[in-house]
Each structure stands twice: as C-alpha cells, then as structure tokens.
Image (tube, rainbow, N blue to C red; front, side):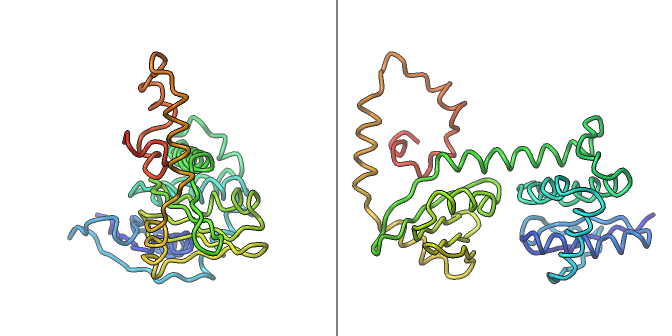
Length: 255
C-alpha cells in the first residue's frame, strides 16, 4: 500500500505554496500526499504528518511556476481557491496543477473535468463573497478620523477586497477587521496597506466601543421607507443572506 503523508501548513498563501512544494517532492517519490491547514483538521493515526515551516522562496518558486508554465489566470484561480474554507482545498489545487502542467493554460477551460471544475467552483465562491463584501461592508469613524469596520466572512477575503477600498478611500486611514480569523487590513492615508495578525483584540475593542449616530439614523430611515405590504423576506434573504448582515446596522434588530 502506498504511503500516505499529510503536510500541515500555516493558514497563509505562502504557507500553502510551501506545502505544495514539499508535497510535490514527496509525491515524486511515490507517496500519496495531502495538505491540511493547521487547526482545521483532526489527526488520524493512519497517516504520517509533516509540519511545514513557511519558506517564502519555495512559495515564490511555486507561484512563478504556475504563472509561467500554466497561466496567470490559473494562478489567480489557485489563489482564490486557497482562500476558501474547505478542508481539502489544497488537495484540489494539487489535482488542478497536475493537469495544468500537462496541458498548459487551457486547463482553466476544461469544464468537463471534475478535478478542474472543483477549483473553478472554489474560485467562484470566494470571488462572489469578496464581491458581496465590497457592497455590504460598513465603516464606523473613531477618534482621529480613522474609519474602522468589522466583517465575519466565511472565506478569507481581506486581500481580495483591499484594492477596492484602497482605490475608493485613498486619502483615508481605515481598518478592516476579520473577526473570524483575528486579523486586520490597515490602510494609511495616501500610503501602503499592512496586514496585522497580532494583538488584534485592541482593534476589535476599538470597533465595539464606538457608538455611531449615523448608524442609528440609517436604521430609522431604512425602517421608515419600508412598505409592509411589499415586504418579501424570502427574496431579501436570497439577495442578502442573513450571515452577511451581522455588522450591518440597518439589520441588527432583525438578525
């Protein structure tokens, strides 16, 4: 029976690509490989586990290889698929890359192949969620004129929405905090964006301590213009599922 090895990586794209690099080497030796993100699975005594230390050079080599030997479009699909929450997402990426390295860029159009379609579907779901948060994200203003927002996305969308908000508010200091993953995107007015993953409880406290009068005004407006006879909760839930509304002031009383 073939040896089965599980590579365990940190929850970052560089960490995942490092694991892909190491797993590929092991795979060439004849082993059956899997990749899991630390903290997202339960160990099974049937497998051997290798804990991967993120190596930015290995990650860069894998990323460059995908772009050059397959396509930039394939790389972006792989990136977004890795931002999904599915436990087996990186295994799906490896299956996709095996095909991609054989057929090149046309792999992204191989809609009849279920292994390709699995990554395309992960990519689509992550892209859709990122797009939706561009519309439903709400900012509060804290002391010093800093804008702060809290989101609880199913997928890891911070890097995918950063460009949108940086372009929209280039001269604002703002913070977008991912409550689920305990990390934040911090934008400096007229400057760069940094990602913070330590001591984020301070950011969360700043957000929770803010009382936004505009939020209450908007809720009153939202309730006032609603026509009871035309209320259609089923349609509303289809267009804006309830889990998106957690930090939307106009919906707080109805969640």
